Image 1 (cartoon, one colour):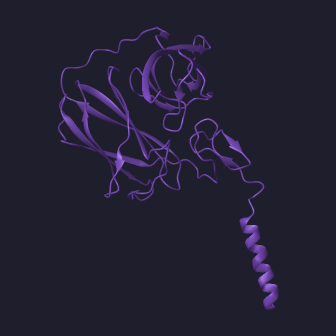
Image 2 (tube, one colour):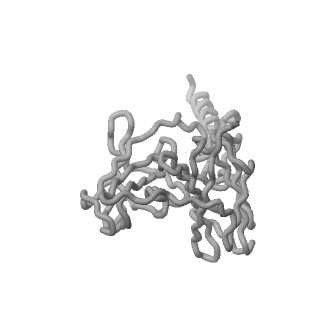
Image 3 (tube, helix red, strand yellow):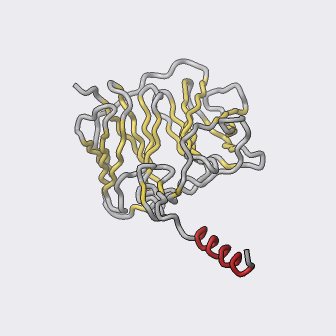
Length: 280
């Protein structure tokens, strides 16, 4: 092959490599049902759309506490180590998920304690969180939300048991209106394993600001803490109304839904209880 022909072929190959694939599909790592032909950001959660996402595989998350013996009201430090599911190798590179590398949710057995915070990645390749105080005895569920590089977002729950007298059963309310927030559900009687729309209306209607890259965040927890779901608004535009779509996994269980939103620089947290029914 002559040099001129080789250079022309190389230039053509380079041009092809730089031309976007016309049949590529870009989807959201957090909301895979959001799909389009052009790159951009997810209109639902704000994450960057990606092409060629790998098949979802669950990674390993190990949790260690210091001290190891837990006591109510005693500060403790948490360490999270992420390893791959193939050879259990440490994972040290992560993608941002809503402006953070790791979202941590902590919920108590009686559903009275709720925390959403962000452990930091240290030089040892682990995420660390200091001075967590678990106020009462009982079971606590800790949900880790993170995104290993070259993988898909992960939601993995761990359990801590604080010794002592068993906590009381969760107390639920049918209240749907708070001083600044009102909830309506569609359907009015939510059915397990079917989509339910949660419509929130804020009062006053102005001043809503993005919080961690979204107009709101929600954690859904079943009354036995088996089901834990992290959601973002399905419909929101900065106005007074937000819609979350959720599928409650099991009938005859009550789900506590914590919603977080930011107004005038202040993060507000409120919760409502929703009962999931059987289809009958």
